[in-house]
Length: 230
Image (tube, rainbow, N blue to C red; front, side, top):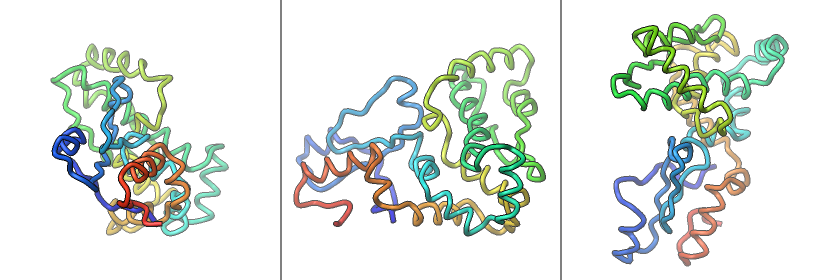
């Protein structure tokens, strides 16, 4: 299981260093910082090596735990045979539509990311994204839609796990599990899926990520404090 259940925000590692505060480690989401060329260089702060903690967990083998818990084996097999790809790849492709859009609209203050409501643009009977409807809704005009697509094209070669947003991944997965990949009831929400993802991530996998390595390095520099507890 993950050795932490929350994140500390609202103050910097630099503040901790100045106050000589011992034993505190901040884990923050990278969000779009790496795409923007920004890197954290603070001893007591570690950024996730994916867009956020949720996307990092979705990248791990714990996704299999969610599919085993909430999915239907025959439906999953049928979908993978039809698509010619595994569930993680299909999920990532769908989340990329929203992630690239969220990155692009930051260039225009009139485009609000709060307009992007994932369930509105994901068809649960086919698990497909209504990209055209999504772009038109967010852009508001054909000229701005062209501009929006032009901005999105700039991310074509970037690391996709820094683009996709964890809550989008989990919401898209939840919708897929309702019909296409399983028979998930409406009463099962994102928090329940996230809980299975968290508990299903092997500690060894976490330790092999940049985040995990950073935690180990922090432990070695902040003895006797332990995050992993081993």
